[in-house]
Length: 454
Figure 1 (cartoon, rainbow, N blue to C red):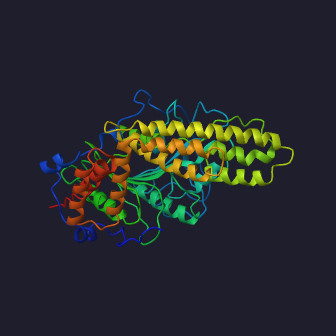
Figure 2 (spheres, one colour):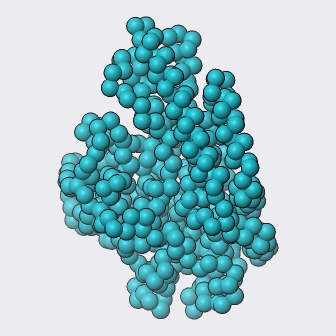
């Protein structure tokens, strides 16, 4: 169950000043020594030589909305607005690919065309990505493209991004999760130079990233609304930890109010790359119709669904497909063990030299392995799965990482205060170099720098 929000986050500017005490100034040398100011690794492009945009663009426009003044405000529920779609090339038949939904900033009447062209750089030859840039803060366009059989989009690998006023699209994404009763569950939500919240309600159980430019401050920005955006984002990140388990606050070094910078493109590539792939590449071409659902679940890596279907077929094997099912079941379990061993090996090699993306991926992988291990504990492959899990325990560094994560999450249940800050600093000293003991603590300490305009 998610925690209730203790303040409506839409009213951040004044409320947070009273709620959260002023700390060190942004330029304090003590802060620089206390923790790394920028998570630079997150903005290092994993494929720097590939500039992206390998594919073509399509434009759709349906409904009553007309581009122009107040375009966002007058749309009707269920109306499909103009949206821009990037379709990558080089897609392999039978595979599903991730989708980036990007909501543009700017005033009413803006277009998603430029945003789609910019965000299409996320897609590379090695890792194709679909990009959707709606021109309204709705998800009607998303549901529309899922109906198209020619677009192999994986609904389980969706990243939602909103820049500046595009944060309204992120906010609507929270609502989409609620209205769909959890069926719409992105990999993560990113509010870039903006804030988004639903007030006192439940929020999606996924990571939430609040990103701000280092130079979104009065000395660099003349615009009255944007000049204190960094401070507002910091307060927002601290407040939102009351309703999200994983809230990140990150600043882009040397950047102001810009949504399509190379650093952010690299950041989105990293977010997509950190997701471990638990789907199995088992040939599905000759599967009988009665096994089509199981084949789709295997392809998507939906292990809870896979286990339920196996249990069903074990009790009552599909007629005229007993041999096909037995063969598929054997291949499935055999490949599952190989997959788990591969992921365990990656985790077992982690140490103090491991980068943030590698450790974040390892945590996601570890949590999934544990669930799969429980799901298949009554099968013949339970023993090799159990042995694989024991191999992780032999890595003393991973034990530290798990301890730091547990301690960090315990602290996130508390309200930000000077005492809370002292506990964070103690955690950093106890678990130096770990993801949660140092890097995530560093994010919180940075957000706690409540630099107020003079």
